Length: 419
Image (cartoon, rainbow, N blue to C red; front, top):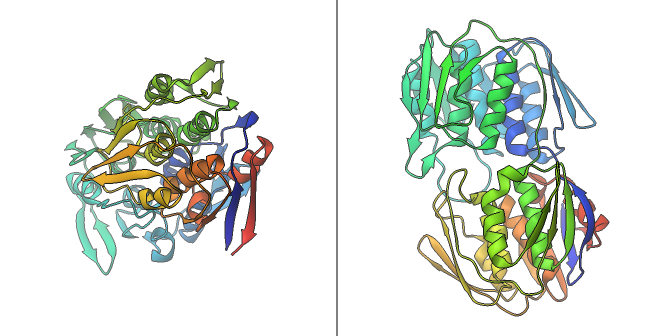
């Protein structure tokens, strides 16, 4: 197992290409289970999570060739049971349940695992499948669904903390092969759900309301193969924007969709960060002196929970006080302890963190608790005085393609060592 070592205090400079979206790739790969025809998915980032999904597809009988960020998936799935060893490592893999249920009228999928960022139940998934006519049992750590026939229905998918992206994906995929019309109210509106919708339509699905809280799915008898180019990862893009802001650097991001970053740009402009938009690029210049800004995370188009930890790391070196509240995952604050180990002054107050900016962070050995906390520690390490060692970087590898190599090219002093 590797650890990352960062020698902080180096300014960054240059260009970085944003990889394909992890959170779009996973459900799109799962959607290929809905057809026996060949599908070609391009701009697939090489990550632990995408490789896990590819292994899962192969375990279900699909043939997958993956080279140069292109996945070619063909053949028929021959199993409706998703193995615990794969699903338990990554929550996103639970989205094979909808396609398996639609294809086989039965599915057995392990309850999911992934990052420890608070309670993330699958109740909305189950609610959606039951509305489509499936009987559900939870037994021995598996969700088992069976249906003689899936039938369209009116389904409300709002949860305690808003719509669920993965539940929207799962129910939409199952409904695409159901009989009749399915209406999903309070559907998630994230760009990643839009991308899955676009891919399903390319496969022959009939779906209205793309990108809105109301999806109307007219079930079809069969879906066919399709080709699709995955769009840029807005969370990776946002992370590099925050890295530029924190280090007072000028960076140009290529392959970026500015419209998906509006709320982040709005908050960072209040911090003093400057931006210059291009057609598919964004140039970011961090200020000499940052200003504190408070944020609250919400479902899209609100401030993303997946950028909360990185933003907190930025505020930890910003003079003044900011309050960061997470309305999506209220317990997603495990990074506070590690940032405080580096000299930050952050305290938890129920579902919020109160951040009092300090003059300097200091390098220290720290432990990554989840994917986005890992990115926050990288940001902290880049601005800290001295050497930072980040352990458990397998979390980082789940969602950031070659981030250490990208940072090296920008001038960061970062390298891997064996634990």
